[in-house]
Length: 433
Figure 1 (spheres, rainbow, N blue to C red):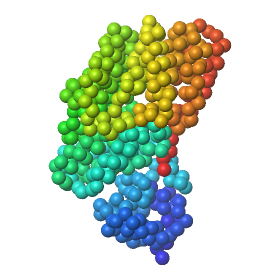
Figure 2 (cartoon, helix red, strand yellow):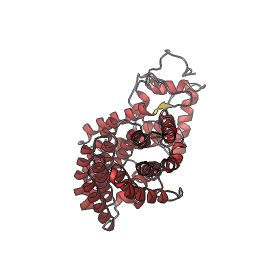
Figure 3 (tube, rainbow, N blue to C red):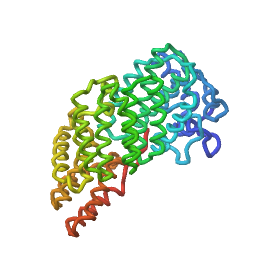
């Protein structure tokens, strides 16, 4: 027998070795599982217990592409991650890992890929299968908590990078770059949602590089929208304006809904800077862009990849909520957005934007002294479970807290402030399987 994964040094040498130690089985038994999985998946691959042990110990790092694919399917992680030393905070018996560790590895993978992207030795794979997975993830992202999706997004990105580091037909190359750009945008948003703007921008830069290699104006515009969003919530409104302005030219060429997104992204950046005139002008420009929308490949992915009327209402309310003299207009837009997001079965429903709309409604009501109405507006947000308390939602509630501090002192204001403080103490801190 080849022995059991439990034997060896106290500290596992690779993440693979650690995960194998969690299983009360021998290397022979685990290798047999690998071979059965490969056969079931139609992959012509086998692995011996000796080979598996050498991979787990770090003695061997090379594998064939087919072995790589089966291992990644078996453990639900990129092979590069499995063969590296495990993070300081080791995954538990069920394979859990801190999400920031996963995203950090993904950001580093993206940086490495950025260096290699000029190479042309592209490989084979089921592009259609990967495309289906990307579409599912894009559609699910606004509606599901990040812990349910993160590892799948990272795994799809790794699969795409592995394909792009190989060699295949030019039209497939463009499609793979397009998909890699979309997934990079999703991971940039994930890093942002976990309050890590540096990793978010690293992912976004590589995503934009993929859009360049795909030569896709709509994707370029969409990624600029992601970058504008990241900068806005990082309290860098001028940088957000630069990203939105940079993306406007691409959006004009593509005609997709990113044209609307970029315009209202400018609006809320101007709002945060206190410029009511420019905020209104940007909101009006977004309305004109909506009338001229021509959906493209990015829009057809749905979910986070398209910018619908409900999000437009939310962004307009977010822009106006910054401006003391626009409370009535902000309340009107926010109330419309809240109503638009009421139907949780709608394709455009997004829990983060719904929470933001409620927060903006509260801001507008605080500005007019309606504290009871403000408390009513944020009540659904305060009930969100921890796995949905992403960075943007916490930041929105922090804005409500700040507005309460500026309002006349009252027991009602203090009570709502305390509830917001308790909510913000437990932001999204996720693990992934």
